[in-house]
Image 1 (tube, rainbow, N blue to C red):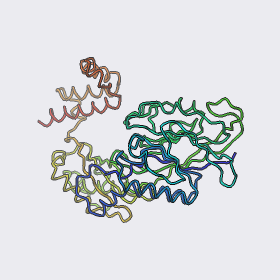
Image 2: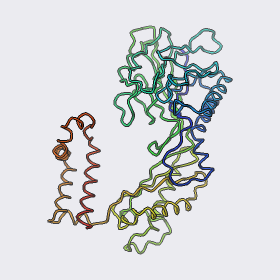
Image 3: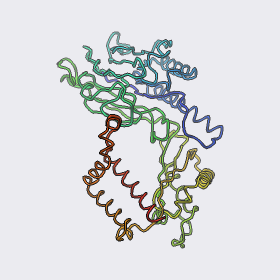
Image 4: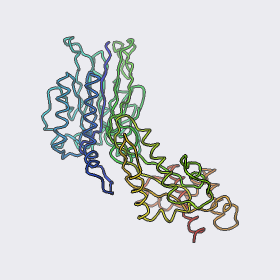
Length: 457
């Protein structure tokens, strides 16, 4: 059985406007941000031109809205035509952002493009130069509307062809956090299909869902907001035929087992990152940049030292970017206890810090834009001494430490406090009980509020 190589991408969201850039950006930066999703598409096509895969798979949400822009339509059509001239087929499944119910269903595509419809289809890919020899079979289905709730994965079944078989589906697998559950399915559904690889879309974080069968979310081609940090791109997949031992989920001795592997390829021109900076006195002193006079380490902290520390973090962030990332959009998040807490919470001070950092960044290869400065600091106080005190604050801190040491105590305390909320009809239907990490975050915030109120007023 010949090997098959193909590129799997999803969630291009072409023509997305980056949200939340409140501070004025320069015209050239605004243009680069506006073009970012299209630049990522151009790089995807260039990768296919370089690697010459057997085909390209696009697993949904190619467009960001049903009312797609003319620019996005032309960009995708031109990309497919370029691949068609190289003999590279394109297989496309629509997702919840670009369902068949929109006018997308009436678009005219180049001959090398297969757009999956509202029912599961199996399309053979023929090996060039070998007549009717089937190289692979690509299965797929599209969303018919923006709120697809059916289990579309259950519609997929392996065809009789003895070759690698791929499923293309825009879906939510299992209980993926943070994503609306469209076309929900399970790993068992994927395995029952008998397919060798699942080209998934919808979840914007890259990751392998399961190994047998291999199921992968490539993630969004270009990060769309500050919550989508890290490299973004596609995956290059290789399926190799093995011994005839039967296929996953299929009772057929004539079907050869397939070895599946993939590699991630970053393509995004714009990166997003939250840069955390701890302003505790010890962190400031430990991170003073070389050559900075810090013999007055006992002097009060000042904004100049904060600026120097943040700049070292920004330099480190820009140095660690993936090849091809030209612009980094950053949220600076200040944490820790500091005497500067009250000052940093003034909007004018945060804006001045933003401007100073923006002007002082000297990265030659990467353009950096500071989206905003988020202040999550706390007023300075000696917690170690306060926890020993025989007053209300000391009791609060000791109770918080006990709850951190014993998660059961924390859960019991929260359950008692919130029992009325979760037992009432509206709360019971609309709220889910907090997870362990949420409880820990609530405890930290409660301690901060108590310390601020009891120690500083």
